[in-house]
Length: 338
Length: 276
Image 1 (tube, chains in turn blue, brown):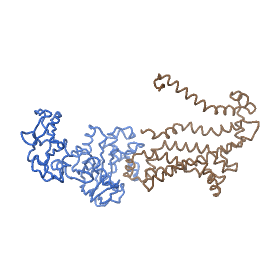
Image 2 (cartoon, each protein chain N blue to C red):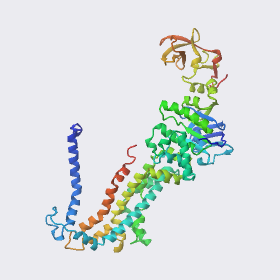
Image 3 (spheres, chains in turn green, cyan):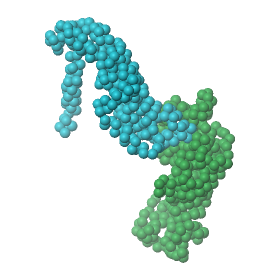
């Protein structure tokens, strides 16, 4: 199934959404290019789902403008925005068969029976659901339900797909498989995807751009590589990457007017540097992670190749970071300096 | 608990004995009614608990003398009107209380529910006056209109509507359904067991109404079966069991309905009691 998705860049201009005193989304501006796979990433409660729902039309923004293509859609009903949504819970109609679920958006739009059956079959074929068309959602596994939700979203051939943590109810193996399938689906459909997740692995592997959110604002927008290699703030540095970036106490590595951070793969145990105590050694098979305590507030992880000799728990070590892999952040604001 | 520690077999015996005793208490009056209705009038008092004589004459007499055909027809019309309109009003109001946003929703719902605390007898006089002033005495409107809305039905359906996940409403919104479409395509099909139970419950209660019909019907043609049975009580002195026969005839249709839809009733009324 392939269709020529309409041009659908999305532009958010100063969008805010307040629930009483809570600012779920606070003055967010974001450009999502046509056919982008944009990931909204952040911890629980950061406002990413609210932002997605605002794009879909399920929430009215308190302030700001939402543009899809050349149209300002603030006052446009969700059904008229040419947007499909895949929910975390899948939100399938439990009393309808898989085929009826997939066909439903077309039925509502008054498309004839034969035509919608044909479209549903095509969508089912894309997602490997053909054998299950007669079943009810209750008789399907989590992964299959998730596919039905996707099929229902693609059958309408919308310009924009909004997905709200669609993989979070799947087990780890299925999640990894479905990640790859979604990426393939994106290139096959050639439409704009906006995808919400709190899982940085999903963000790094699926999207071509990531918007990292915290407390209702966007901390950084960029490609996965940008966000990983040049985090715009301490928050992003610590949120992206497993284990997260090590942030050393001010003044311990360089001058006290800024913080220095280094990825665990760029942090080394050396004969001199920041004094630390080994707290935990984790043998992961392909590598070893040594977690060190610098002081009450600061910990750092060092990644070593498997087979390396490692210091024992409780021993004192010195940590250092390659000069060209150091990230510098403002002590006050936490924002990137270089 | 002693019962919990007793062997499983004994526990079953105890439980079933208890149920049997309760069932006997409940069925005893039914049994005596059936026995009496199937005996000739002059044998009713001779060994009242034993089926020592049999005739269908009393049932036939009850049917013809009591005009039960006419009354049953009236009752059926009344019960069907009340049931169907109650379902419509309950669905509409429960949907509004579950899915629509409007000011003072909780307060209005509280007021709505509080009407369940007001017994029928309290409003009887004023309702009769209203019906009289509308000129609806001895009419189907008079028999049905005061019962077309029910707080119980609204409450019951609201509880099951509230269990429909909000995501489903939003998915339907994305698919292009408005409230009307969502109600028809999603909400109602999902609560069908409860609707069935509510319908049955409404049908049973309107079928068994006595006080209200007896107050607003003065013409024999407008009697329901429950008020019509009164006439049998005093109609024939050599057939003291005529009223028993009439009662059985009046109960048979409702018994059939109950037996056919019993599962529906239990499933609907317990729907949502356990999260499934």
